[in-house]
Length: 318
Image (cartoon, rainbow, N blue to C red; front, side, top):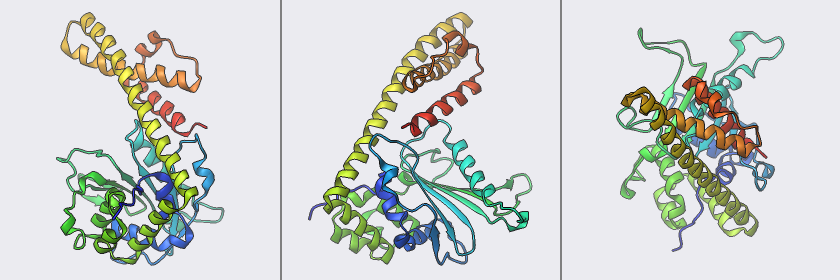
């Protein structure tokens, strides 16, 4: 039989599956698989339902799903197919906004419910020596005394490539492992195979979305547009990074010679890469390109933040 050929990790498909009120039970299943709480989530309300305008041609921005469960806990869930500079800071920023945004007039601080941010990554962020199983959970925690301040803020990172499940083990795998398999490999399977491997009701509904996209001319066209936009986006970032590295090596060799030491050369290359990225991004965004001498005088952490800010503008530009 013919594979479905529809990747669930394309933002358009991801939000079709998890971001529609009539599919809230599918999102509930995913959340329970990730959180593994003693008392499972019974139901969730999707706060920013699927909207085709999010996927207008030429628009590239972060697409997420916001939800609230029956206990009042808030969630933001997104799929991330790149590892841009500033990703960690952006996720923490989103999480704190989600938490603080609950405060209304007349509320007390004790009324604010927990906020949970979940980011599914199609690339590895941490070395396998640090995180082997692919699921990292961050909270307010005192490492010295091994104390948690509370569950007010939680950030979950799911590195999908670290879930390498043999085909014969999928049916018996843990729920999160099954979702990792679905997100990474559903496009390579036909419907009958998927139904045998993942017979749960949430997976069957998710498969139905993939079938719908594959068979509907309009949805398939929208899918192809988003897949192409993603490919073009990644291609541009790769080319920009290559060009920046060339500039960085040139700058680093010069600084290394000036300082007469290998350490100076290595630091110069790293700083030169950042300078090259700033220049390229500023050109694309139509900004005045900062003088190279000014950038060279900046501390490296300031350059890193500048690149992160420019990348954020690039990702969300119309």
